Image 1 (cartoon, rainbow, N blue to C red):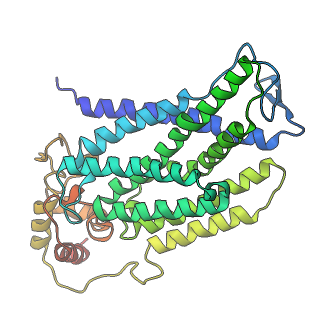
Image 2: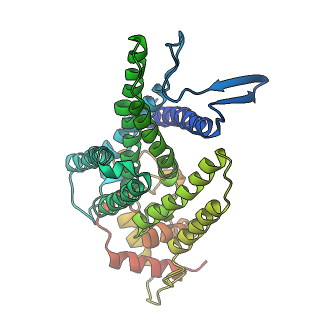
Length: 386
């Protein structure tokens, strides 16, 4: 009996990441709602058959409560599980999922160091910007941080595979979010507690700093969630302008988040979700090639079925075969095989989408499939008799 330990470890980490992420994001959304919904610093709520009376102190209570709950481990374990998953899938499997030799020839060690540099650099830039006068203006700060992340997405797409670029933008944002908790929010709260225990009046600036970082995390949550599911949607990460698509969808998410944040305060403005929805549709149309006339474009070049099969045998059959030869590939992904012409015809639309249009296949482009080969494959697939 053989056990695929990598697959099982990946499942465990993915499951843990999802569970802890739900716990962190859920508590984060709840406290933002609570903060925005409090009237005269208190609120009554009902849930699960019970009534809850919540009260907020703008700085701190007069004395230290006997039982105080800290919300921090949800954030820490989300990051730990996410980093371990990143290491397993994209660093341990760098040759398959991270490196694209058509963009930049890297060995796995170089790719990992570059990835880590972007993640660490993101936090250093963000934290440094927070400590400037710009950090005092949330709107200006948000615009600059958004442009910085868009620039990072563009740069990463010139280095890594589309999937690898996306996941590293997500890792940058997620690291900033958990670093806010670890380096600012929790330490500031501990200083407030220490002041209470010492019988001193806590510094109100500590709470203001923590609240600002918490607000930043609130707006960064939706883009992170998008990136977490993006590896299932190659029309996002596989697009030549994937960095711009990510920026557009992230901008749409700002309007959606803003709607709910204002709604909690009693300010209901439906222009925000309307603009967010329009942006989403525009990104969808752009991704589909509607604006540049490439949607459904077909080449008139004559390519034989034998040439199609030869191209697929060269670039695809190492994985998509009943006897895969690619290292670490025990069986064809999703059971999709291209060993016969019947199988190729059956999957022709999918092959064209991934290898010709989106170009995220073959994974890592290890055998350097050229643009000419992709063009010929697309034309040949269009000409196969159905």
